[in-house]
Image (tube, rainbow, N blue to C red):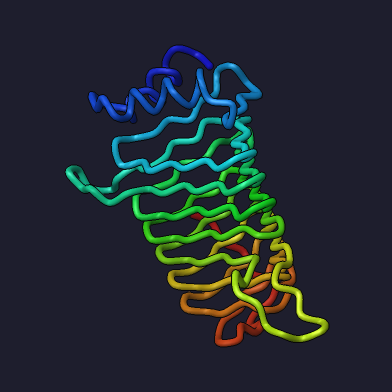
Amino acid sequence: MNNAKYLLGLKHLGFSPKAWYLFIKYNFFSSHVLRKNKNKFLLPTSNALIQFQKGSKLILNGNFILGTPQMKGSNIEGRLLIQENGTLVIGAEGFEQFAGMYIRVMPKGELEINGLVANEGCSITAGKKIHIGSGSLFARDVTLRSDDVHYINEDDYEPSKPITIENHVWVGQGATILKGVTIGHDSIVAAKSLVVKDVPCNSLVAGVPAKVIKQNVNWHA
């Protein structure tokens, strides 16, 4: 990392004693944080709330900025919980988790994030693996859940199935993506949609449950 990028990362810590304490604690003294690149860091703001349980890992291939408020003076937390033997992998493009977003990796769960932009109010609960590709965009209040957390007493019931979000996927405000779903690259999920089945590449889906309403779509931020 060059000096300019290094200073840009550290600016998120500000003058907060809490942020600097968390920065030093987790980057240099925590067995839970594995920095694959010595120039990449967990950069917690004063709004960051972090909890690692036994055997959990945060693997950093890029910078992870945690708890960025969108308005100065906001006390909304950015929350990260990695439960027993869970793993969160941050790709080389890095990730900025805004205040108001909650990430939970369940016991033995895995979450991989590559260059995602996610707005306030988003929630990710990873049981079996969730993979989020590069260049994807989540509007406010998007929910991803690869685990039901609770159980239904049925013989063929599977409480946890993986979710794959391929590269360059736009998920609209308030949309929910449930377990066992793959969303193809360059697709759009309309606001308030409930996605329970796979979405083809370059498709626009909408509704409850979500259905393909347009194909061969393209979008840009």
